[in-house]
View 1 (cartoon, rainbow, N blue to C red):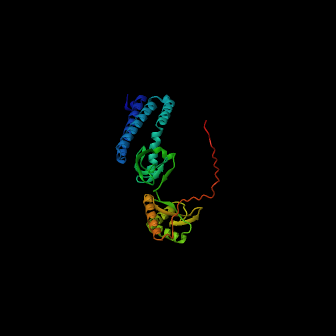
View 2: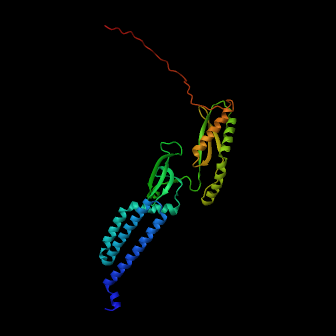
View 3: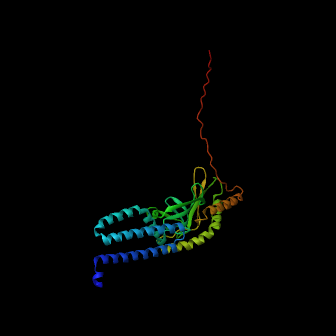
Length: 298
């Protein structure tokens, strides 16, 4: 048999196709493993990715054999592939989520996010899971509670992502201060405005620059970044509301600084401005009827 006839032999052609296909699968497997080792820092994630690449390579090799030597197995291969895809659905979507996080800019390491009802700072973005240092829960304020939470990456496609630090790393915060009726309300408002402007001045300057960047990137309207003090009358006192902008990681510390400064300034007013507390007035006491009867024992 001449060389041309040998090459055109169906059995030889299938063998050559198999050899070329296996070579391509082997080269692709090696390249994917090297890429994973280069870009994935965490050893456990590298191990899982290597396992996934190996499993995928074996699956492709089996499909190649069926395709070359048993064309009639096409339907069976399709069913088997669908079953494997269904079994590995969470794994596949987690990897897709990782790609979306990395390429889509959903969040990155160091961001403070809320995902699947869990708030925390992102300390690691793995191929399959995102790791958060959790804040809140039984700890008041935006403080760490000590729990490290791992969330599957596939949730980025089904859950809402709240990012506190992506493009505008500031949040608005507010608190209320009750002031007694009869106090000097103008003086109270002047003190609150002055203290807020002094404490928040640095954040306002930085926030304006960031807001200009956000306005160039998104369709947002101009907003008030300066501190705002408003008041309203209630049944028991005059309620002042202090609203201000602050760095998302400095909310608790800034609130403490504002309260301390405000209380110090109010003490200097010699009771011209007094903080109110809950008081209750009894309008009318219903009449009481007491009946005493003698009881004799026999």
